[in-house]
Image 1 (tube, rainbow, N blue to C red):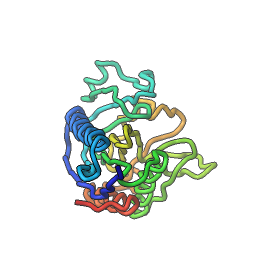
Image 2 (image 1 turned 90 degrees about the vertical axis):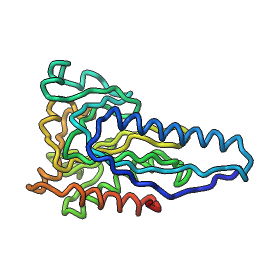
Image 3 (image 1 turned 180 degrees about the horizontal axis):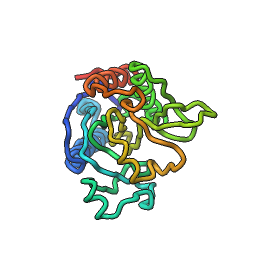
Length: 239
């Protein structure tokens, strides 16, 4: 059976939405895609149905999430502290350690069948980073990578005194289908990062576009540029 590639990607804007609700929504799409791939493997070529791809954007109320490779010790709040900060906490099935989501942060969840694009998780993460780096450049910010650390950073060059993470990433994949994704700090309240060891890294700071530029940034404009760069780099056909 040959694989029918489908580079069409449906873009979905959810606005501000509860983390658990969006997680369940991701899981339902993820399962549907994986199930279709399993059915396709059992089908004759004339019966194969191409898999769909999705790019979900949202913001979350204050929430901390811990990836399966992370340590609970990197959450510095107990249950009372979470309540006092109006924050929730979830252990989840993505890679990576602990991170924060909240208002003023653009969260992108690509649910892609990578067999429609390329089958390389390392390349997938680098492409996500490249889309963010290009978006930062559109707003006059020089951003890049630090060897051995997933995500996007300001003052990332070797020897820089104060590297600051502006975008965190954590993904899950099964049968080349992805979920979870990236969190870009635009107008984020950075004080919430003070309650965790972000991504398990205790010697580097976290920043936002607002802090770096000195003014609030239009979220819709950032999301539009990020969408454009994702579509360009992955050669997506947006619908």
